[in-house]
Image (cartoon, rainbow, N blue to C red; front, side, top):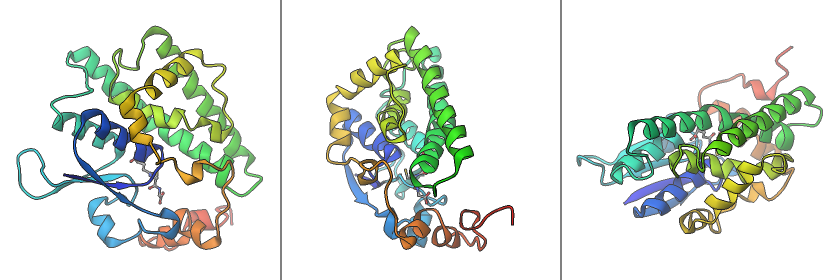
Length: 248
Ligand SMILES: N[C@@H](CCC(=O)N[C@@H](CS)C(=O)NCC(=O)O)C(=O)O
């Protein structure tokens, strides 16, 4: 059995989609980040970085103690290997392409779209530089993806972990006001991936409540748990940059 420490966000949905695709049994352990449920020492022992998702495999390959994995991209690779190489191309070039596009998602599409969500939807009004910078990066990354999907059906040629990593982020672009209209190849791909029964099961009834609102309202306590003082203090950081003007 695999425990999935879970929030219904794009990063969380990567893991549930993958588990549905490969058919490994799992149990969801939901967290309410607004209430700061991820800020505990117990969870830090599972994910030293304190973010979600993370998994604990109670029957790891090779046996032994339960094994924890954090970082959604590393989780996808772990599950692929556990499922006998599922959703990673068998040939070396295809495998490298899957790794390249997975790393691109983890280092580019995810963080840049994440910052676009932060500045456009959560940050106080008037953060024009952040909105412009990350909004433009989010659009640029979609253009990169559109060019790739103009030459191949899927990011690595065949459907793979790279598509599973990218798809939940691309389907959330409406929340940052990005229209997919200028990206016909991405639109074709979003529909093709979204039509897969395992993908539909992976996101079923698990749409993030915070994705349903273009501009969620947070109480000061919720802000502190998610972005501010409570969150930083749980790491022993006493001067949280998000809580003060860094120029003063
Ligand atoms: N690179 C990490 C990102 C994880 C991440 O930032 N998760 C968000 C939810 S999707 C989170 O835990 N946010 C809480 C926080 O930032 O304190 C991954 O892909 O797993």
